[in-house]
Length: 84
Image (cartoon, rainbow, N blue to C red; front, side):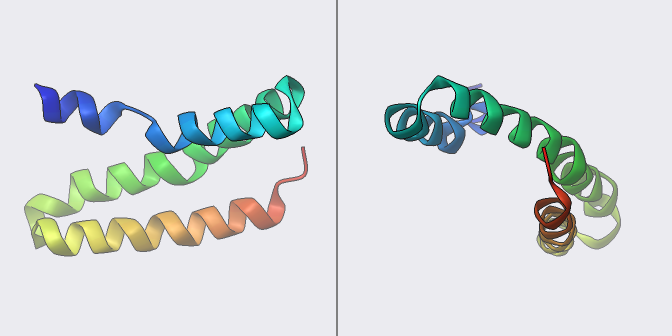
């Protein structure tokens, strides 16, 4: 139960928002939250789907590697195209 909860806690986002809020203010936190939300749809969901579908077929390690490749390819494309 604890490991499942820990996997869902957005530690890096939380820490980032604390720093962004302190340095740049709440409007920048809001703007960044939209960026992360859209990035989640574009990169994180396909990453998790890749692991979900590939793990039973090619094993955990290879599925995670494939998922990471999917994530980074989509994340780089998203970051380059993001204009909001």
